[in-house]
Length: 323
Ligand SMILES: *Cc1c(COP(=O)(O)O)cnc(C)c1O
Image 1 (cartoon, rainbow, N blue to C red):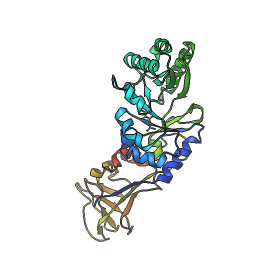
Image 2 (image 1 turned 90 degrees about the vertical axis):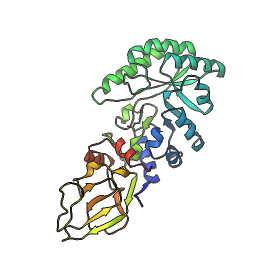
Image 3 (image 1 turned 90 degrees about the horizontal axis):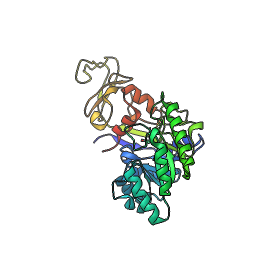
Image 4 (image 1 turned 135 degrees about the horizontal axis):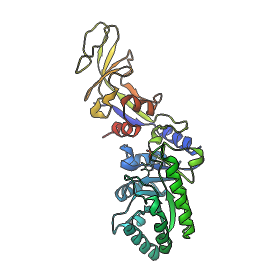
């Protein structure tokens, strides 16, 4: 039997409240099937406390819709020809290309108006309009009669000022073109703060307890408990795993049924009380005799754990998800 992996629903909801205290409601980002933990499962826990949900694409919208009646925003454009289906599912579409814009104009005419999301950002990973193209895009959006939720993403701490300048300049261009701007949202977990909250905060990894430098009072929502498969008493001689790490003769240790095959970062090896993380088993120095043994719980700090493993909190959370 492998490790038991749970999320603490109360902590998830408290984390939403901690971000909302920055002055704007929280849109829960549940892309990549809820960071691996299940978008529907997160929706069941969070539906009562979030303003909306954010998914990656149309397939994720279709999968999530049965679990919530809240607005669901999309991060990427609908595939060509699929905007009607997206709207029928109650998704708020993203538009970043002229092709997507033309299709949105058609749907707006058919439906008597339409609100779309338009991002202003020069990051290749996101479906957004480059800041220098915003003005001419705004003119076409005005002609199409679309209302707009304008967004950006502070994808770099050092370029945060430039990204925001581009965003606010785009807002002025859209207003000058006569476009109705319905809302503004600019930040994910890492840049979340009072002055930047605008109309909503898009929080993904922060739901699980990460702060990434934001000053919010979150806690770790991950609960990973692993069965003890063997105890190594003081005085017993053994090596911790591959390589040459001895188990200190004077310290009790346990072998836990959880390894990097279960998403526990191999980078934990040799840090804190963990001697070695193998594919299925972990050797840990502890006199703890509760079985299963808590590997990650409420007293942990998601960002500190990720730093210890040399990975991002996103990788930690996604890696540890049940599969
Ligand atoms: C993934 C993503 C988020 C959520 O990011 P976190 O760092 O997990 O909070 C927010 N906005 C956009 C545009 C994203 O791509």
